[in-house]
Length: 335
Image (cartoon, rainbow, N blue to C red):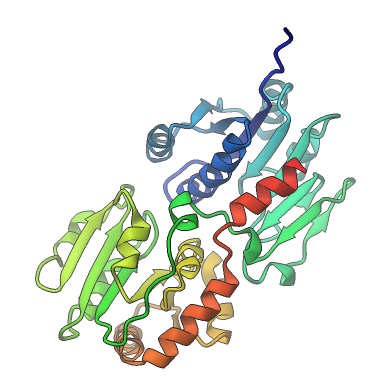
């Protein structure tokens, strides 16, 4: 009896707590969908403690990429994945030639894009930014199919399976998360100001790569609860009424639940999301001076009191982010 070999998917992503963790999270969501369809998935990463711990915890096989120049690495990667059926890139550190080199007969090459970084010569480009159709994508010798917008959000399984947030008339619970690492410790001034709101409970989530954990923990007590790396962040979100989050990938998770939110842009690459959400009527903040923190505190208090606005925001957000996006991406790529 002839045994059909298992098909393989290779993920090449960045490491490093400030960038790689978000890439790892969304790629594991997509890997889960490929695995459910009978594919074997392997991640290729430069060794990094935070990312590799995450991959081990998620049960993902991974290979350390040797320290080489881009040209040499492209050759090494091509050899490593010669018998792979699908290659998927999620990296800010490559170049056009690296990606183009991976094209080969019988191999499907895919790229997750956030900001039109490369001239894409591949089979699929995935960009699930709400504003993806506004970005000037550039294409190379091979013009890819473009999977654009919130219909293709790459969300963890826990969000795919979660129920929409119940919008309570009497709301007093705020969820705060400024990404997995928050290197500038923006969480601290935000929570310090929210703590001043009477009868408002604040739940703060910080990631395992957060180097300022002790600073944030110093605010715990009374109406503030600090949680480090919870097993289910969607469950923590569901226990709250509104969210104060960074204008990054966590916005899609919050949106998939229909959770009213306020945004804080904590990095330059979050400016477009901040501006886009602001145009849709969401409160968004672009500096962390005392005056802005006071406005954020006031904005959170106002949103908690405004039941009608929270209901409206919830419905809009659930339309913007499809919680089954990873499934749709896998189906499109497999065909």
